Image (tube, helix red, strand yellow):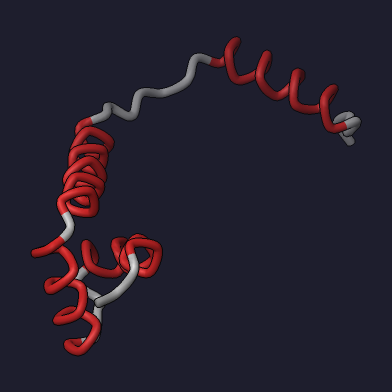
Length: 80
């Protein structure tokens, strides 16, 4: 059986449908016997769904400028 650490490394490929069939079988066997990994997978799925539902609004110009200024100060880079 695969370790939980190995399974966590495969979760993104699993969710994207990119696991080779041998890896997929090992993943499924592990998940059938490991409730904590199932919980982790479900929490990741929930997070992905929530992220897809986020709105992408335009950032107001004054906020853009404030953020740019802050980042320039923090990185030591002025406008050139």
